[in-house]
Image 1 (cartoon, rainbow, N blue to C red):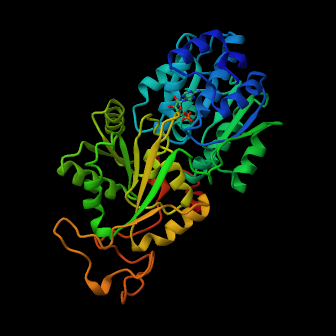
Image 2 (image 1 turned 120 degrees about the vertical axis):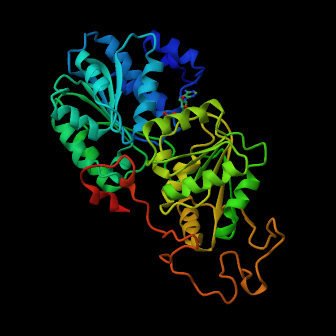
Image 3 (image 1 turned 90 degrees about the horizontal axis):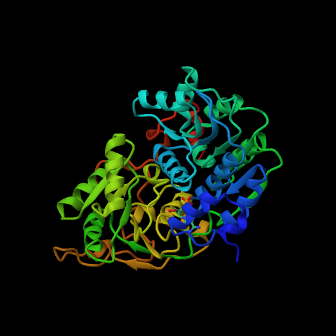
Amino acid sequence: MTTFSDLGLAETILRALKSEGYETPTPIQAQAIPPLLEGRDLLGIAQTGTGKTCAFATPLITRLLQFPENPRSRQTRVLVLAPTRELAAQIGDSFKTYGRFAGLRVATIFGGVGFGPQVQALSRGLDVLVATPGRLLDHMAQGNLRLDGTSAVVLDEADHMLDLGFVVPIRKIFAKLPKRRQTLFFSATMPPEIATLAAEMLHQPVTVSVTPVAKTADRVAQRVILIEAKRKREALVDLLQNPDFRRSIVFTRTKRGADRVASALVEAGHAAEAIHGNKSQNQRSRALDGFRSGRVAVLVATDIAARGIDVDGVSHVVNFELPEVPEAYVHRIGRTARAGAEGEAISFCDHEERDLLRGIEKLTKQTIPTTDLRLAPNAAGETLPAEKKPDARFGRPNGVPAVKRSAPRRDGERRRAPRPSGEGRPRQGEAQAKRR
Ligand code: AMP
């Protein structure tokens, strides 16, 4: 079996990996590290949870050490672009962790926080800069950063960048990079727009593909609970009484929904917090730190806020509402069963969501085991009235007319496709976000 020391990484990195407790490289690490150390371009088809950050960070740090050079003021030797603040912060932390014995200058910049400290970090010059595209362009426009001395660039979660309308900013950034450079391009999915972008940016790349998105993590046990929409909160409170739910992420479709579910949980005595794009950076960091430390047992999140949350030991993912886009289901349940652990994903599915469940089962080529709670009595001992009893797994309750997907929900909130631009709001190309 391949070991980290077989791969040719710098000694200081091997030490850091050892102190992190990494024993064997994950498949993407074993396949990507050797060509990256040779300076090759890479097209990585991989989602978070595969170990991709270590797969790109460790060879890039090794190359920085092999070609020692003092970073010049307002320049960065390596640039990593990430779609969200959370992901940028995590990648920055990973570079610091893997490079902790290498003495590198690493900085992370993103929007929603002050410019001052970022300007200072840039003015000293950097080995590694991790940035979200909008704030990076702001700094470039203000003359705080030039990219003509950058020798390697990583574009992470390219498909997510596309969803957020970041393609135009990315093209602007790439136009300022030297033609001769090493380029790494990662995406969980490869729709035609992404393949075109990759072809433009990469030069004779090595392609590494791990766990295609349609294949859900094998170690995640999945089940669906068929339930009336209005009984979901009560059922969630019940579910979380189980002490096996040590560290759980609950997904809602909207930010308001996340707030409401989190409040209901807190009221029922659970240590829960909501995380979404309307929260300040400080609030988000506090919630995430609490979740990591165990102070917060339940994080209630929207898809975009949760993407890139890298917390080991998540025991359960609960889909309070199913996502509109089936691929998001795969990303959601990938939050658990990370780094070799086991996990469970439970999805509430109400009557209006049955088509979404079918879409997920089609994409993941599986039938998810189902428990039907629609006839179970609630806490008050009530069941559905007889004429509303469901007549089949997804059948409408007898005599109940079909509800149009766009009908207002009982709680007055209109069901609609998620607005990816609501969080980490891009300035340009928003129309692209409507791709799905
Ligand atoms: P990523 O796919 O980069 O988001 O990484 C997923 C998680 O796996 C992170 O928590 C890493 O710390 C962890 N990880 C990455 N590579 C390894 C490895 N070789 N052994 C154990 N854990 C790892």
